[in-house]
Length: 347
Image 1 (cartoon, helix red, strand yellow):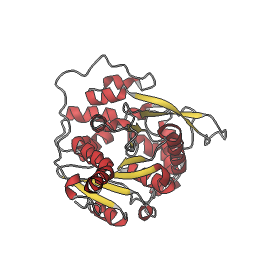
Image 2 (cartoon, rainbow, N blue to C red; image 1 turned 180 degrees about the horizontal axis):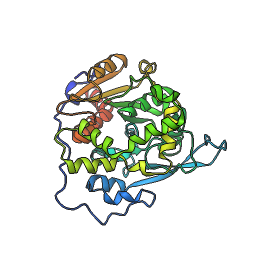
Image 3 (tube, rainbow, N blue to C red; image 1 turned 60 degrees about the vertical axis):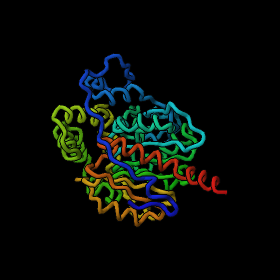
Image 4 (cartoon, one colour; image 1 turned 90 degrees about the vertical axis):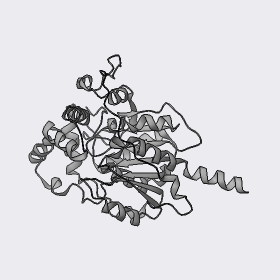
């Protein structure tokens, strides 16, 4: 592991506990889910996912990029709002990966709250559980602008922004464009070296729709779970597949993702060296999706960055090793205040 200049390496080093074991008792039936969630949420068995789903809300975010040419109004955007409001430390804002939703933080989110952090889990425009019945543009620019409006209207303070997989590209793009909004960055198994959407942006729309329809198929999502995680039972894999594709059941999902893909997707290779924030890079040593060699490359290209590799862990550490991720993030948020306290004690 590499540490920031002046920061003790021990501050970010600790073991990597496994993800929570599936409960042997039936998932709680007394939870009340938001009515805007697809009804299939009732079929989810994972109690952590059920508890976090019950907390998902929608907040109005100003929008001026509606595809029908109109402007003004708001998009009811989905997120999990914090129970803790913290004035001393920066809020922690959790993004998610490509075509995912905030429920991928079901294990780590409660641990971050237990650490006393003001924690948000935000759905990226076009994915997750926001109301897109009046479809806005879902391009990279629109996603960035939408998140900025959400930050200005609801979060309002410089944040520690956490981006896993493609969410790391979202985080880098946002941090470089709006540095005043981002105090620190955490990038997890970052998908940041891709050339955008590749050939998708040149396909006829009919082919694009045919291609993205495969993304929500149960067989593909099931295969992805077995690729991302080891020692996963078939029953758990099926349940996690249902969690990961829940947002795909909205009628506007395919329109939103086709719009994103045909706009070109994320290509942040030229922005990586422009990141000025202190950055923690977390990577699963056994990632079968993106090689850990990219972690070393990212560490060298971001000026103020540190790298922590999590052993016996694949592409989604916040699901597979949530305790390790939560502790790393918590200690990273507290790092500067700890050093300031030590310096004050020496004087």
